[in-house]
Image (tube, rainbow over all chains, first blue to last red; front, side):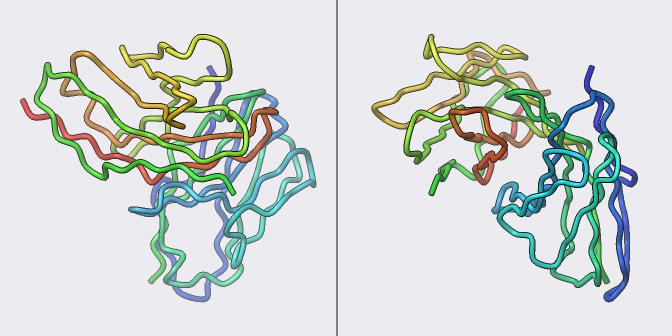
Length: 110
Length: 114
């Protein structure tokens, strides 16, 4: 079974802090994704990566950056967290035509 | 630009009743179509997908969906709902080339009354 894990289920940070969300997949997938999920808005793509050190902006990249130094790991970085980044963050990795999701990190920025 | 509409934000059904969740999409060509389910506090799990061929696709947990090109719809159905089906359901579309970008609907929250 494909396994996508996220470093934290719940995270509370203060405004202005630098925040790292980590995602690891165990299936050697080349493609990995970060989504943000908000009530009434569904899932919105923040960034994705199609190979090590390769990344592409999604629909809402502002305020976020990403890092992919190893194939299995994809990190989402909030350089200076703001209250409007309080949300559920979902990581996914992709085989040919299916995305597999991690359990999510619920981030609260105070 | 592609879009997905799930017109029902909340649906309540009685256990044992049938279920249909609606999904309409806007896309330049026939896209890849997906239904995902998210149980409380969990990530998304794929229920089923359509790429081509038979327009009625079977998925896990007794779900099925029918692709109707003329209506740009991909509705999810289940003949008899179980209390454990209470969850949020997301329809998604992806490019027919199998590319990376999925577009998700806003979700339908299903409540099951015992």
